[in-house]
Length: 118
Image (cartoon, rainbow, N blue to C red; front, side, top):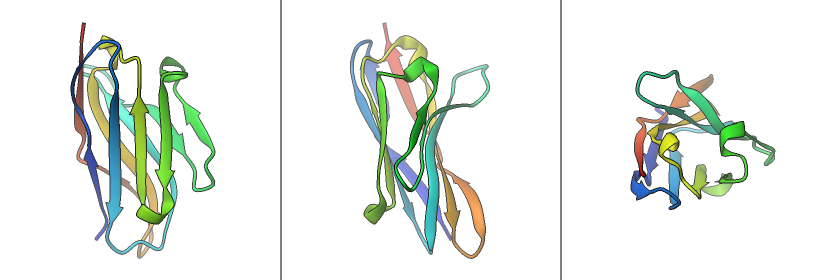
């Protein structure tokens, strides 16, 4: 059984920073792309940032220059460093990973709340 466990959310003032972590555990043969999505109240879930196993990254336009995604393949962990946070970044952030265990499958974390006050 594969699990993604997120940590690092919380309440921060506008302009502040937070770092999210997501660790994959269980029977894992390989991990391809890992990413972060977010969902604000009343809105659809959207991609924030993603990183391939080779380190290629892509970002939503709204976070470019402020957020940085990285991963530690030895620890099966992906990170999201969020700087210059804005109130519109407030959302539940979900970790996502394409993992080959018994079969290839996309897994989701349970979500972590990020709240940015103005």
